[in-house]
Length: 233
Length: 328
Image 1 (tube, rainbow over the protein chains, first blue to last red):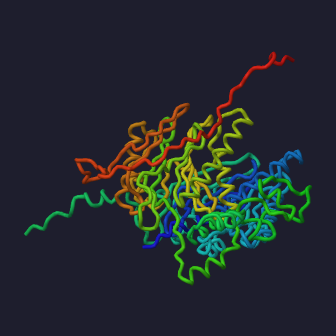
Image 2: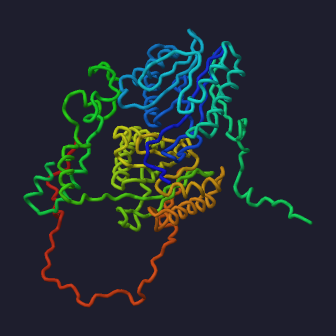
Image 3: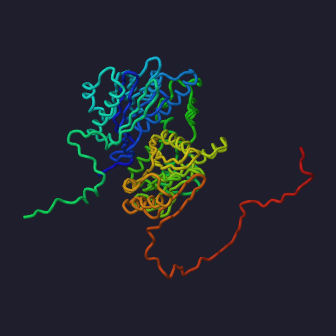
């Protein structure tokens, strides 16, 4: 079994960003893989750029960390120069400039989401190559392939905050069930005019889907369990 | 390459020594392999240069920075290998390195085997490197790379301490290492477990050769990481005491030593708490040398001393005070 521990650290990932009536909800799984080995089963893929803008990272772990570090730095300077919190559009544009101008070297897809006082809650998807698309909802990462149909059917305009978060958690959990490169826990971040709320849903508390088994705590529990009663004649 | 020209005339070395030297030349990849320079927004102009990325700020002009990778000799090396010359192998640390956060701080652990292909080059090497009085770093991967990168960042941290007048923070070491490794795009093969206690508390990070980092309560790296991680996943819990933590780290490293071919020999442990650190070199030696002759070793013919000449390296200088001491 060739685990290839020298493979670059990549985040298989499922990342989601959804707008609702009053803000945005960002969601992600927590698995970072190196080849076939899970290097970090509890990573945080939703990184803060400013107080009101967060970004979901997917693709190469190193590339996405470096891009988000640079953009956080630029936004910090921009906020000081502007004298006001930066808008989501500016954050998305800065990410897009880095992603597009270095498209040959970078391999990272990002979803920028946040709330500002001019436009409210906004989601911008920035896939490989450096396009920027403003969308009511965006999905990314290897696990997103399994969610396109789901979102076409389940997403609707003007959801409430609870509905939107439940949708995101359900979607990430469906992708985790089907995508090998996604797993761990589900993290969500809700951003609106009042501020930012981070939530955490452990993997074994998620709803089970078709043909999934209950998580077992340990093989020892199964092995030591009492067997069936011996047959009696 | 000047090194080669000088040595050629003076002493005879085998060809592989030159190959070895050539491969040691380092050059920042981002300047010579990729054009335009990554992360440069538009045409070079001082106004748009918002960030100082060390070497990159000198890259505005076409003068190459000193040091870094140079691929000039690659074609020649390929030709030599085709002709039958054996390329030198490099020293890798097969390795099991681990770190965990316990109640009062951080415990780092490492094995002590350094391999060169299938041969054990060093049976008792030190893989826990000093970064700052309160920060230590375990290194896996190519031994030269881990040594060089940790020494470099350790001296950068010391200069930073002199400048700021404060104790170094773990996140500073993390950022310096991550920036360096990213700019070499994974060619500096150093996978590190960085741990320390600073004013903000205990921290533990893993750093991969491509420059990505993770922050974790317990971490393992190296070829023996799977064996060690299985021990941690089974037995780790929050709020371990010092003795429990040391026992768990030793167990994880032993698991790597006995189940991974690239790791072996002894267990090194380093315990870092607020204001205090303990480097337990060879904490456990589970692989003692068997069959040691009880008579000891002696050599029949003693070495003859033909001639003795002592050359002092530092001149002894007499200082005579002439006149009065200077006064302001």
